[in-house]
Picture 1: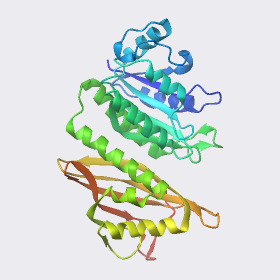
Picture 2 (picture 1 turned 180 degrees about the vertical axis):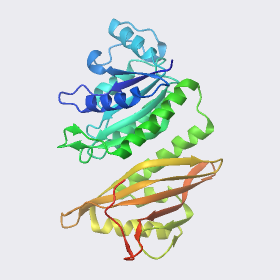
Picture 3 (picture 1 turned 120 degrees about the vertical axis):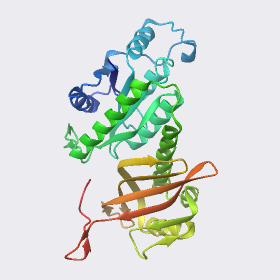
Picture 4 (picture 1 turned 180 degrees about the horizontal axis):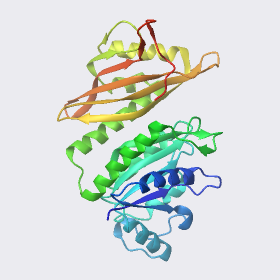
Length: 328
């Protein structure tokens, strides 16, 4: 039967990763399509990389490396549980990856991250690392917030939408692990490219980088934004909206949840939920509101660009006002 390892990517005292991995394992144990096992880096105390040859050579000198290689080789795919420390993955997790090569390649992997902002920075870095190792990173992802998904920032209490997202992630990891294909399909490659594109949008918003945002939209983008008029046409109009946001927020945070992609040959769309928040110029924290977001892409000269986006909130028909206090 297909074997999936749930890797705990932190050894820090007081870590929450063990709770998250236990939640993943308990949910996965109800499935009958694969065997799931927790891999705890505490059980594999690897020193800072001490192999004289690159992992690509596959000739491991130390017994701790050979033991680690045998452990990872047993699995067809993985769910990586990572916290975010200083906007990055824990050093112990990166070190564990660096020891091996062949034992990682061509295997499926899903990412479950947590942190103050859902661990999204760590997840993006981990995704890039896995892709470099030719692993099949699935598009669905689970991002848990320390503020809303942990009671008193300590005890995991994930929302129901995270359970659904985890089930979808597990579906993809099991399916991909069974295939064990050496090369991702074009659709999978495009899905990964679109996810990276949206990550770049988020990074540019956080940095208030209008030039960076300009490179991510088509010049003829049509935007149905939350503010009037009914539509904003062209890249300059779109950037004017972002410039207005940046003028009244001292720092900006943008979060995306439950993102789902549908990809064709040269057209694709994604939908999910987004929240823009930050700190006002007077120092007041702006919590923001959750909105429905859709990004439509065209592949133009080999590059996916956003050609349409739409932001909306539900409408109270009787009162004629938008509802802005809902959460996904």
